[in-house]
Length: 303
Image (cartoon, rainbow, N blue to C red; front, side, top):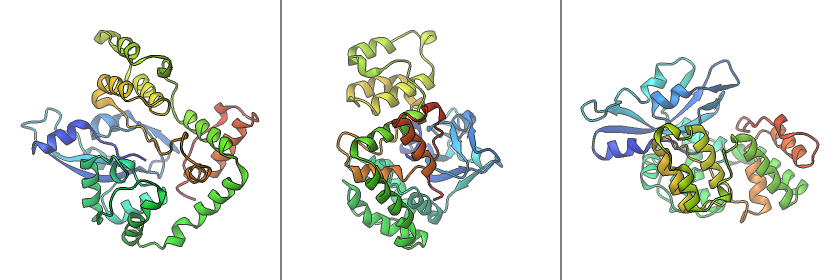
């Protein structure tokens, strides 16, 4: 659940041509999943255009754009407010609840290497005291304690179910099995890239993407390529090449866990973010008992 925004939103705010706020929003329509590209075009949201019912998505969205300096000044959070199938969440209490329910602190706001602008927006909106950078899971606790206080929940209420599931997965799976399950879940969540970026040098990748305007790959394919690189070799130069081509169409990739360095406990904790039935199906895929096409990934935030 990364915090999505447009790079231009930051630029405009720094020039005093915009006001940008940390908000959440969720789909409240009658479908289990809603695909809506209009949200990206009209709201200033830069994440995937697929929304699960009830799940809270976090973003830094324009609440005001100066029409004298911004060409598309009609985009912003008001475009969400005008719809009856989406709800905008401004309240700090509900935003804190969303972070706790997902058992997730966005790295770009809390972890080492955080984005200063995003961090400032989140800290100000939630009125959090700065407890330093987060380097590993244990470092999250000072922030989680503050979020619990804001949300009005007890620690036991928050972690009891996820802890039980994590313990179960630790007992059932080996590290390699858990790693394979996480890999399957990632594959099921993402569209296939047009080619494997890991099979290209950075120079070859740059040449492959350096085409005439009318020959450029579509945005979805480029974002799939970017995701494959981030979750694969994650080379800085390769990321830069794809990011330059995508520009404001870049969809952030939520690299929540590094399979090279994560231990079994970390992977088990990560799996609790998915619906239990989803994890079981992914395990069946790993064991060869079902096909990945049968896997529909849903999160476990309602557990």
